[in-house]
Length: 201
Image (cartoon, rainbow, N blue to C red; front, top):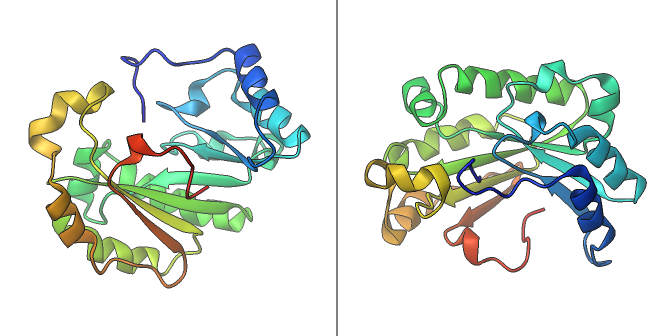
């Protein structure tokens, strides 16, 4: 995720131009942030992408999900939610107080609404030892994918928390070695910033 430090927010017009210029190989338009649900153009842009034949996906912290109207929800094919641990203290220290309970509620709510859900986890020093418990929880849910990212300390807010969160490649590999889901595709991503192709959308 980017932060206000990164200064990359696009206007509705500029975003429509990006959608118009996508090559035929692109099938999904993904809206990320920061928090994309705070952008005043999110719903017009989701509607625009859908009108062009794309599937849409929103990466959100989930705080506003239950405020979406039925019409807005209809413009979204997949909602990606964050869970870093099923230990409340660990998860909420990495996100925000109440974040774990909210993500769990949203998973159940979105399943009820017939929406596809994916999960993102960021692996840091804090949750290295709790991934197996998170896997066991996610194995009971109807999700399509679980993306497990190594903490990337070189941009935005993350750079200010390098010392408390950064892990080595070896620590990431060891923590995720036997972490798979039988009910969803699992992706383990060490070098997200080097991707030239979206492998998991």
